[in-house]
Image 1 (cartoon, rainbow, N blue to C red):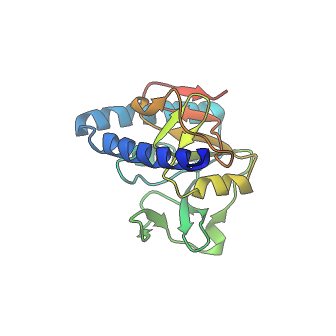
Image 2 (tube, one colour; image 1 turned 90 degrees about the vertical axis):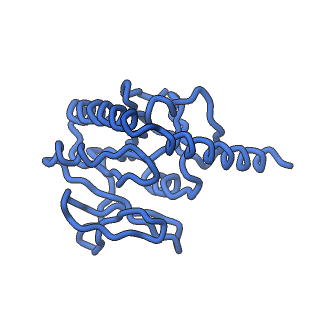
Length: 194
């Protein structure tokens, strides 16, 4: 078996292990870690004075960032909409309280039209859902490659992964097409990646 196939198989196994670990996190621990992560993210966001937040709605026990959207209402929020046929994602404006659609994977997405489609600029932070990260910015996602392809289209976009500190790893498998993160927010701190 080639080294590339070994990495793919290892990533698949690791994803399953980490998803299981995240799913079995007790509710009280999840709630506590989630609030600490949001506090760190809000402070960091305000310090950097971003003008737009590209984010996501929680799925499969991801950190729930909804309370952050309520506390940063002066900042426009944009959520991803997946196009599985083209294997791509784009971001559309959304405000807390606006209705959402559910895609075929069960992920909540904003209703779309051409007027609410957005692209990142230098004042945009893209909050990237992650299963695990390293302090050097390597991210383990869900295997679809949607964010890697999106960041290929916007190579100057600034990204921050959000994970609980238990999912900050020393080492993760990395392939040439994987896009590294600029920052990582956890329930303990925000890390600037090397």
